Every structure is written in structure tokens, then in C-alpha cells.
Image (cartoon, rainbow, N blue to C red):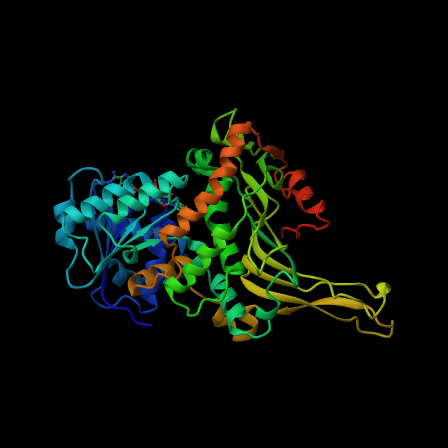
Length: 478
Ligand code: NAD
């Protein structure tokens, strides 16, 4: 789908996120023909360099993070032609006049705040001061959006001084994943699932976002955040919302976000014994969490698991188990909707009993799978066995269908198109913090320390117990 001409300014255009995600994503959209002839990208950051220097920088980034697309030398050169660079200081006046001159008027202007959140307010302020905050402009803000309710409110307040809510795009890149959107298509595009989508038929729901890597070079930031703030409050919460929400009347931004907000507001407070925090231990020559963040006393969690209840008519009695962590067994993210057993087995208990599980897999191998029970083939009588009804795109829709855009490609183009459906609204973010804050405050007040867990495991034993004591078990991380 063609988009209108735009100027996109990437603040933090020399940073890690710009290099790894934003710039390669823009190049792929250019290759897909979505950057009309006059659209431009302007890098803006603290380092002093000229346009040629920035083009070299971007070329190196694309070479490193998307070597296949980078192979098209002619296209890459044409893309680089669209780039320029302005050295700006977010908190001072350097570079702003020049930037204002570079950004065209009468066209879509998007400003991507890929800088630390402490600079969001200053950037918004200066965009206004230098005449770039008008009704055609929009801003994209990265995570983290605050570290608690008070700071998120303050951030919303500061941004609202210069931009309307419909101009503010709060990124949660999980929402840009193809499968996450497909989850909505499966739920609301089929008659099959929605009638069963409630506590009468769903036993429980599990959401796992497991990483196999540790905190790596982000130790400083991570140690001040922890898994609850870094992952649970935003990404897992957003996934929970999409699973639990009522059908919106339309697939439009406010209709969808109103329904998500209702889910967050329906969440019960989480009792202390329904949350488990963990911290990973050393693994061979890989240091433990504390050594990695350089604080032997750190009580920040690198893992959190919890049981949540959405207290409304649809979900009363169906628990949502959520877990996320680093240095776990594998890199695997999925949502599993585990249906109840049939009320009675006509085949007798010996035939075996199975549950239907709908699995929405976010990584690796994005796809959706429904486990159904059939008869085991052969003469051995009526024995039941589970088989997957696989909705992996590549198989059903041809190999090209698996070649879908990366979340950032999708989301950046949504910003240009002015579609906020896959972005978090300010009140949603605040409601999510309002739910998370008491959990974190409880840890702090009680002085709870995270439980150590082995690297390469599924987290601390207490997390396993969280489900075992309910007669349930986590799905294997693989
Ligand atoms: P980074 O430290 O690598 O880059 C920061 C960028 O900001 C640099 O381009 C720097 O020049 C610029 N900058 C810093 N101070 C400035 C100032 N006063 N004026 C103008 N420019 C200034 O950071 P990053 O890892 O790219 O992260 C950027 C944002 O994206 C952060 O909010 C981060 O939380 C978020 N984020 C990053 C990742 C990631 O994987 N790196 C993932 C999700 C979200």
C-alpha cells in the first residue's frame, strides 16, 4: 500500500535501536516501494557528522543487520540518498534551527524519539519551540514509558502540552508482530473460537516470553527496571489484553484500545503468593545476574511469573499465568489458550484424555496451532491422540507469506498512515502501571529477594509451584 510523502526524523539516529531495527526497517519499506520519491529520513543525534558520514553509518548498520537486503547495491545507494543528518542537542539549542529547515512543510512529519525517556519532554518542547509541532506532525516514543504510575502520568502530561493524543504513538513492538495481529483475525474472523472464549470452556491461559540471553550490555538500565517493568507491565500485559478483551465493534484505534483498557481495569490486585521473582545464577563461564550488572547486592528480578485474574463476566474463574525471564532454557514466546477437558469421556479413561490447546507462537517460527484429539490410527481400538491443526502461514499461504514485515516496519508505516490501533494509548499505559505498582511496592516493603534459578532452566521452582498447586503445569519452553 503506497503511503503519502513523509519526513521522518529519527532522534537517537546513531543509537543501538536505530542501527538494529529502525534503519533496516526503513530500508525494507523503501525496497517494498513504500517510500515515495520525495520521502526522507533525517538522523538527529548528539554526534557531530555530515550527511556522508551518516550514510556510511547507516550502510554499515544495514550490512550488519540485514545483509540479504543490503546485497542490492543499487537500491541501497538510492535509499541512502534519501538520508540526511543533523547534530542536535535535545536539551540545548544546537542544531534545532537547521533541523527545522530540513524538515519539509505540508507533508507528514514524524519524529521518532529513539533516545532515553528523560529526553522525551525536552524533545517535545523543542519541536514546539522551533515550529515543528503542528497538526501534520506525530511523535513516536519508545519504551520504557515511565517506571511507575507517577512518572508515566508526568510523561503523558509533558507530551500533552505540545501534542494531542492522536499524534502520540507509544511503541510496543509486540503489537507489531504479524502473529499478534493474526490472533485478532483468528478470534474475530471465525465463528469457531469466540463462543468458546470464556471461563466456561477455557481452563486457563499461559503467556510465556522466555529469552535465553542474559542482560548483556543493557545491565545498567535493566538493573533499575527488572523483568516486571521491562516486560510484564508492557509486552505481556498487551498480549493479555488482546486475548481477554471483548470484541470491539470495529477494528479502529479507539474501539480496540477502549476494550484493552477495560481488561487492565478488570485485573484484580495480585496477592504476594501469586507472584514469583527470580534471578539467574552463573552458567559455566557466563556470570550470574549480579556480576553481570556489577552489583553484588542487586535484588532486581530477571524473571517474574504471576497468576492474574480478569474479574469480569467472561473470565471469572479462569486464571491467566504469565511469565517472562532471561537466561531461560530457550528463546521462545507463546500464548497458550488451554481449553477444559470434555465433561465426560465416552471412550473410557484408558483411551486417554486430552485438552484442546490453541497456541499462538510469537517466536521463533511465528504461527498459530490448534491441538485437536483424534483416534490413533491402527487396529489397537479406540485410543486417542493429539494432533496439531497447523496454521503456520508458510504452509497454508505459500512460502512468500512467511516473509512478512518485521514489527518495526509495520509500526513505522502505521505511524505514517496515521493508524494508532497497534499503539498504546496514554490511559492504557497508566492503568497498566496502576496494576503493576502495588506488586513492586509490596516487594520493596517486604524486602523480598528474588529466588535464584539455574541458567538454562525454566525459572525458579516456586514458579513451577505456582501452577502445580493449582493442578496445572507450564508448557515446556522450546
Ligand atoms: P543508545 O544509548 O544506543 O542511543 C542513544 C541515542 O540518543 C544516540 O543516538 C545519542 O546520540 C542520542 N542522544 C543521547 N543524548 C542526546 C541528547 N542530549 N541530544 C540528542 N541526542 C542524544 O540507546 P538505544 O539503545 O538506541 O535506545 C534508545 C531508546 O529506545 C531508549 O528509550 C531505549 O529504552 C529504547 N529501546 C531500546 C532497545 C534496544 O534494543 N536498544 C529496545 C527497546 C527500546
